[in-house]
Length: 240
Image (cartoon, rainbow, N blue to C red; front, side, top):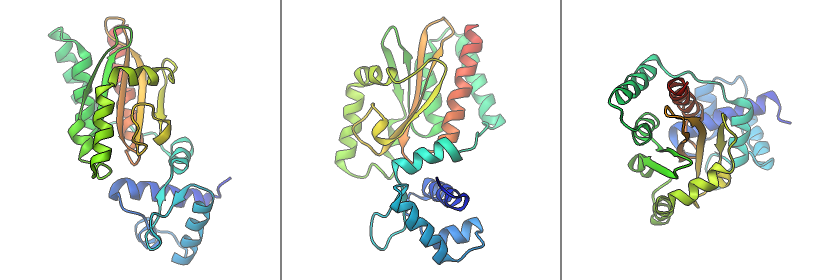
């Protein structure tokens, strides 16, 4: 069980690493988050979090990075709900209404909208028809986690076997839930530095749909969850 101070420090490390992609040190936490304790105390708490498996230190002289366990604790216990901005809500409403008016199939365009708004890879499709679309590969590969050929290869391989990989993902889903799969929990890709936020939904013509956003483990989980929930809400209102 983490103390309140340990929880706050872990939350700060996750937030800081999400923004910078650099290992987080005690000095940056003290400067940016207003703790009324010494850097030495923060270092001691961070060392304790590392010993418990919530953080790790990539190099001896570096700060610390969240582990899968650290991200999981953040998602389950520390992450606050985040409402989409009115601008993003209006954009999604307008685009989906335009498509409905033109009788355009929503799945392909929905992936594009989610990719633009999340700056990650987005996937959408119809489960029964096994028809899946992806968008945003450029945004995903522009992330700092994809700086070597091996990680790029794993991502391209995932796209080559998208249908099979989606089938594995569907097995982990209950209907109506938004699920977060972190690192090694993510069945879509062999690159364990990626997480996926995914949900099943009812599409306007009654089909069983799936929506997913995949990005690095330091993705903005709360925003991506809110994006999926809002799009699911719009789609299911149309299908009612």
